[in-house]
Amino acid sequence: MAVARGLTSLALIALAAGACTDGGPQALDGPLELACSVRTERYVPPSGRLDLLIVVDRTPSAAALDASLAAVADELVTFEGRDVRVAIVTSELGAAVPGCSADRTVPALPDPRRCGVDGDYLDLAASTRNYVDPLADVLACLLDVPRSTCAVSQPLAAATAALDGSLPALRVFQRANHADLGVLIITDGDDCSLARPDALGAIAGDDTAVDAACFARGVICDGDAPTVPGAKAGCRPRTGAGLQDPIATAAALQARGGVHIGGLGVVAGDATVVVTAAGALAPACTAGAPLGPAVRLRALPGRGVGFSTCTTIGSAWLAMLAPFLIHPIGTCAPRGIDLDPTQPGAQAVCTATAGGEVLAACDAPTRDPARPCYRFGVDPAQCGDQPTLRIELGTELITAYLAAIECEVTCP
Image (cartoon, rainbow, N blue to C red):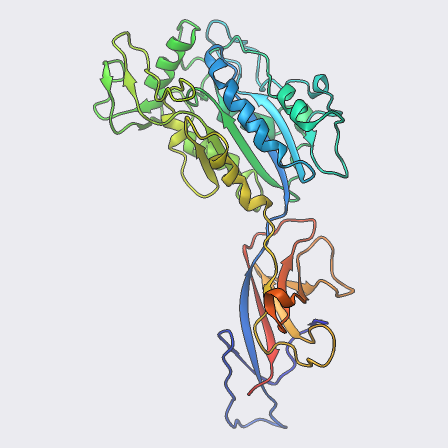
C-alpha cells in the first residue's frame, strides 16, 4: 500500500531514475539517517469525458457535404457508451445581406427531439444515454440539418455563440472544468465570420458572390488582387477588413476548453486558390466533393487542431479527439520503491505533485475524489515483479500534463 506522507529522512538526495548516492558526514545535532530516492514523471491521463460541438455548413451549395456528414456519423458511432456529449448547430448567423435573417444572433440549433433524443444534445454515456433508436439512425437524423437560406457561413463565430451562453438550449452542454471540449467544423467553403454585420456590403445573396466577397475581405494573397483571374500564391488571412481574425477567434474558442486546450477539427477544402475569369473561386479540390478553398480555416495553427482533406473525412479530425479519449495504461514503477517485497502490494513512501498540487494516493482515506491521485498496481505480464504506477483523474480537470513522483528506495 502506498504511504502518502512526506519523506522522513533527515538527509534525502533526489536523483534521476534508479540512481542513488550516500551523503557524507555533516555537523548535525543527533544521528544522521541516510536515504536515497528515485524521481519519475508520468503523463496525466485525459479525462475520457468529451463535449463535442459540431458546426455544420448548410448554405445552399453545401449539398456536396452529404457524403462527408455520413462519414462523420460512421466515426461517431464508435464513441457509443463513452462519456461523450454531442451538440449540432449550423454555421448561419445574421448578416446584412439578401437572403439572411438579420435578427439571427445565435446559430440555428436543430431540435434533437425530432430524432428521438430526449434533450437538447446527444448523450452517448451508457449510464445517461438519452436516445432509444440505433445510434447510426439517430446521428443520420441529427446531421440531416435543414438547408439554410443564407449564403454566409460563419462557423467560428457560430461555435463561439453556441458555447458562450448566447444559445439558451446549450448553456448546460459544456461541462466546464469537468470534461474536455472538441469542436468540429464541416464546411464546403471557408470561414466568413463577420466582425461587422455589414462587412460584405450590398452584395447578392448567392453562394458564388458571397464566397468571392468573403475571400476579398478575409484573405490577402501576394500582389493583393483578389478579383484578378488566375492562381494565387501566399494566401493568408486578412485582418481589419470587416471579418474576424480567424486565428484569434479559434484561440479564444479553444481556450473555452478550460484548463485543457480544446480540440478543433476542420473538414474543408485545402488552401489552393484560383480565381476564374468570371471572378468566382474555383473549387480547391473536386475529389469526393467540390469544396472551395479554405485559406482562413487552414491557417489555424497550434496543438489540438486537426484537418481532413477532400478525400479523407474521418481520420484527421478523429485524431484531434484521440488525446481526450484514450486512457493510457499504467506503466512500470521504478525499481526499488517497494520497501517490503514480502508484503502484498507496494510498500512505498512517496510524494507526488502535478502543477504545484500535491497528489494523494488513490487509496488514502483523506483523498478528495474530485482531485487526481496516484496508484500502484500489479501487472506481471507488463512489469514482472515490479509494481505498476499510474495517475488517475478525479471529476475535475487539472492544468498539468505531467505529474512528478518521488519515492524512497533502499540504498545499495
